[in-house]
Length: 542
Image (spheres, rainbow, N blue to C red):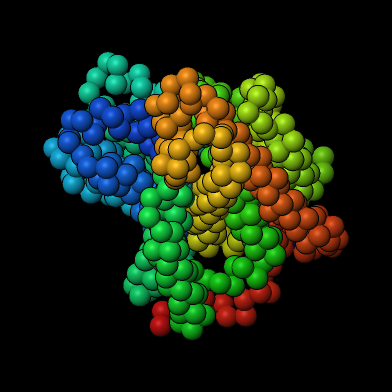
């Protein structure tokens, strides 16, 4: 009898060593996500100690995410060249060293530079982590479970970040929020070589420095422009055109990046990966879902503080059910994918998320019971969690092995752009609806000056109403109603891209019947026929 082909043999199952390695890889995931939110409670203390300006405070918070977004494509490709484990351990060592530098910063400028360097180090970690999961977990079910665990760790880290920051500030000085990064990264560096295998496949082509510059500049401009647009709409300061111009310029630079990738022999990002429909559809899904869910969640947190009157800590606690249910959806995805095709689970999860958005739009209002609103947003989190874990698996498992780092980087870029677009869209739509609603419900007797101030931003609306004392109750009620209207409108609007993503996955991935041979080929490295130029995969020298 002929030998069974590799595609027909059962995938090798992970051993205790791989699962121990997964526990180790959870550490940088927790650290990265915690570092995104740990500054929330620390900023007042930190700003007072370093005497930061308002602009410097914003850069301290946001430069970390900006640099991560700009560096992902480069770091993903670098991991394919030198090996994801080597890049991961080097990045972890750098992250620990720069965290120490940040902890002992003596002025705002030093801390901003340290946060930017943390972003560059952090960008090495995410693509490497997901690339290594494919190497460590060859079995489909085990790999999906491992990815679900990583996503859950990211959610947990983001949720506990503000709480950890608050607790550390009660006991220590503000620098302690950075020093907590050192032990987990040190443990990863010390034990990583023994527990985490290096990927054998390489893309040895040299990195094109012009492409590196274009990708970094384009992503930085797009993400910065979108986030500043949201911030400007929230505070009512200045025109939106400068931020739109920056984002548009970034889009133009990214278009030049794409054009260059098509023309050079050894691209920084091989666009033929996008010819694989699993990868392409999954990336579009990340963008659409991010635009809908992130914007909705962003406005929900604003509602909790401005309308429900909760403190930042109380508002954070009210988001915990969303986090818990989101993790539950993530962990349910792998066993569900055993009973039905992964694409079907993704489509069902997105459908649940879209229905949750519709429910949130239906129940939102100034007097809506808070538990009902929390339940509605949690339905969104349940569906989104179930879908996104498998979307990640579709991307990672469909790429050729030597390009897994680039595929993982593309996944992270899609997530970053979706997040930035969601925040910008949520901020812009919420503010536009707020102004239109408040202008139409302004209480009689409100002075022109007070009305103009209240219309400029939610913060000014609440401050103006509070300053008026008992006479401002009607204005405060109108402000609350306008904020609720903004959330309601965006929840309804946000359901649309989520539903479109569900429809896209259903039509392109879930409905399409494919022969077993194609399924096997895709599972072992994607649609192999899409690239007729093998030198671009193997990285031949130019």
